Amino acid sequence: MEIETLTLGGGCFWCLEAAFMELRGVDSVVSGYAGGNTQHPDYHQICTGSTGHAEVVQLMFDNDVVSVRTLLQVFFTIHDPTTLNRQGADVGSQYRSVIFYHTDSQKDEAETIIREYQAEKLWSDPIVTQVLPVPHFFPAEGYHQDYYRNNSMQGYCQAVISPKLAKLRQQHRSLLKSGGSC
Image 1 (cartoon, rainbow, N blue to C red):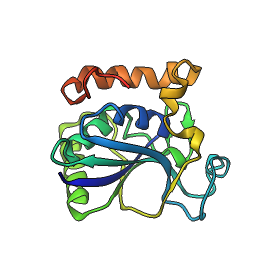
Image 2 (cartoon, rainbow, N blue to C red):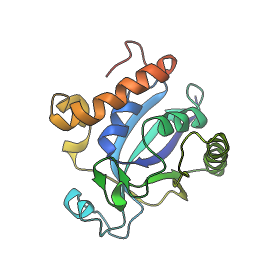
Image 3 (cartoon, one colour):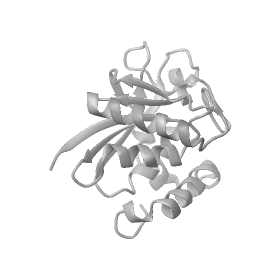
Image 4 (cartoon, rainbow, N blue to C red):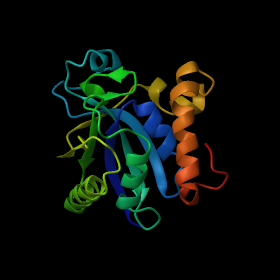
């Protein structure tokens, strides 16, 4: 078993967390903040956009079960990598598309998949996803962890997260843990 860590930002961390928790080989998903200049930021600081942090999820996964490439394919399925500093109605640098790599091989894989997707013209606009070395990661407050699982009937969860999970389940069914849901 080869456990790796990968940190991804693609809009609201609640969306990413809910999706990646459904994948076989993903052992843990922690919502948090990375890439900014404030030590130990809190959610209210992040929401101002002034700290430079992105909302991210940090994945611990078994590379023998799910590869970095597969995780990145899912990542590009569940967010729009062509919108700078926004995902839907969520606007600000904290919602940017970013891959924080932990190893050189993760960096290579991220750059390769972006080049491939650009060449395939999967989106009409260019991919703006940043590929950067992992900075310090700050876990988000407890109420952000397992947010969808604990609040699935909340309006944002129904309107934004549930459709992303439906897309994940349709396009990546073979990757899901048994039962296919949280």
